[in-house]
Structures are given as structure tokens and as C-alpha cells.
Length: 355
Ligand code: SF4
Image 1: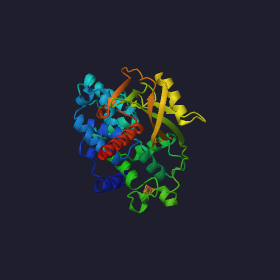
Image 2: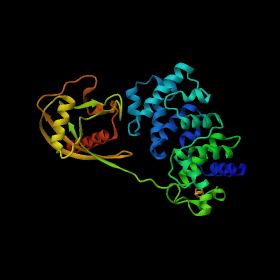
Image 3: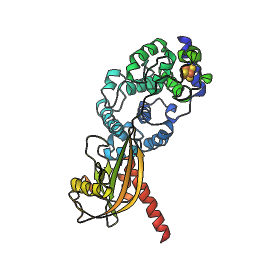
Image 4: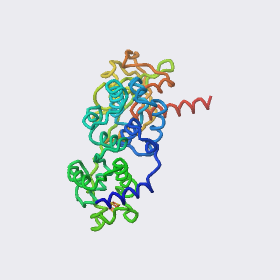
């Protein structure tokens, strides 16, 4: 078992990627990187990580920032509750612990957004605490090492944890956890694992049995298609935006009005209905502009965008605002709405060139 962790750590020291969050042991940096990396690829995270620490260099800066600004900084990473929890937890670290990171596992677990994975990764990487963590990469690697033929989900975690406790090294806890994740990302990949390059192949039951391609058992993905009609309403060079409810999907983000098409409903009918239901206004005329498509984990959303003329303008209040094109940069938006803004930008740039 000692030999196992030694082999893995030697491999890690030699082949690990030079990633910005690996150059520090600061728990604030480790925490932000771990939260960003959940559900997001390393390459996508790097520019966000760099921008984040320019905007919020310390946990005090994050705690003091307005939530809307934090959500804007998060725009494009998705799962916005993660940003909301970062903001809340930063305030708690500042108010309850004077900005000093708590090191007791149970205390850390009480911070918003700190499940076993986040607490274990921050404490093991920043403070070298011997805590086992399980993410998707570690789960897949261990399932293959143990030749567990099943779907990769949390039902396997008790067995995986037991296995990891047996092989956990006495020192370099954080490096060991990161080494397993790195092995999963670079070598023991979901598809086409590179077993010939693997430092653990001697210990791997899946490799011995030739099962590495069939573990874990693949899941059937059910993707739901959603079609929505979206209204661009303009007034004196400003665009109408509304804030989503404070609870539920994409809470508190800003978007253009509109919504899902009902069964057998045309796009214009959907626009009319949504504008009446959401804003109490009547549609006078609508001119089709373009479509954008966005993929969420379980949805594929097509947004058909229409320039809308209304019989009267909708009322404004703190959740309904007219925003200039430049002002969009202050409004956190779901990725679909951000794509619409990009298309409007292209449209405006092309229009300016033709003048
Ligand atoms: S030998 Fe292959 S299947 Fe086994 S841990 Fe290494 S890469 Fe994964």
C-alpha cells in the first residue's frame, strides 16, 4: 500500500500540470479554485481564476463586494449557487473568524457550500490534513483499480472511501488527493484510458482483466430540448431586462423577457402570452432577429430572438430595468442571454461599419 502511494506521488511530481492554484497553499485560493473546478474544465477555469484574484485579492475583498458584482464575475461558469455560497462563506470567514481560515473539519463543514468534497480538498491541500476526498475523477480511477462494474455514482463512495483510507499516505495528503484527480484527468480518462502510461497499472484489477473501457458502466444521457421565444424591447437606445426570481434556477440573474413555447404554440403566440403574463403588456409587432442555442447539463435550449414593439412600455422597478448596451457589463446574465448580447454586439458593429 505504501508502494502504491509512493508510485502515484512520484508520477505526480513529474507529470502534474503547472496550474495557477498549484502555486499556492493559501486556503482562499484553493477554495475558489476547487469551487470553480466543480462541473467545469481546467482550461475554462484558468481565465476566471486569474480575473477573480485581480478583482477579489483577499477573502475580505470578496466579503465586501456586492452580490450582483460577484454573480457578474461568475457569469459563464454556471451553477450560480456556487458563487452565492462563496460570497456568503467569505462573509462568515471575515465576521466569525477575522479572516483566518478555520482548520477544524466540522467547523469548515458549517460554512455555506462546504460539502465533504470541498471541505476535504481545502483542508488536505492547504493544511495537509489526511482527509479522503472523492470527485468524479477519483471515483472513476478507484472503480477501475478495484474493478467495480457499476455506474459511477455516490452509491460506490463507501467502498471507495474504505479503499482510499487503506492506501492514504502519512504525509502529503493534499498532493495525494490531487495526484489521484490528475491521474483521472490525464491518464485514467473517461474514454480511452492510457493504461500503458499509468503508474498504477500493476495494482489495477480492471487493467488485469481488460475491463478498463467498460468501467464505469456508461449512463444513458437524457437531453431535453427546450424552445423559447425571447423579446428584445428597446427604448431610446436602452434594452429592457428583468431579474429572475430569487429562488430556483438561475436565481437573481438578469435576462430578456420571454419564455418557453407551449405545445403547438407559434413563437409569436408565445411572445404575446409571455409578455402579457410577465409584464402585463400587449405585443403590437415582432420582427425575427436570430436564434442562439445553449447547452446545459440536461437541456438543449434554443432561443429565438425577436425585436418587439409593444402597445405601451412595461413598468420599471428594482427588478425591471432599461439598460444601455455598455451597462450590460454590470448585469449578471445566464449564458443564453449573454450569447444574445454577443449577437447584438456583432449586429451593432456591422451596422456601424456600413454607415
Ligand atoms: S491501469 Fe488503466 S484503468 Fe487502471 S488506473 Fe491506470 S489508467 Fe486507469
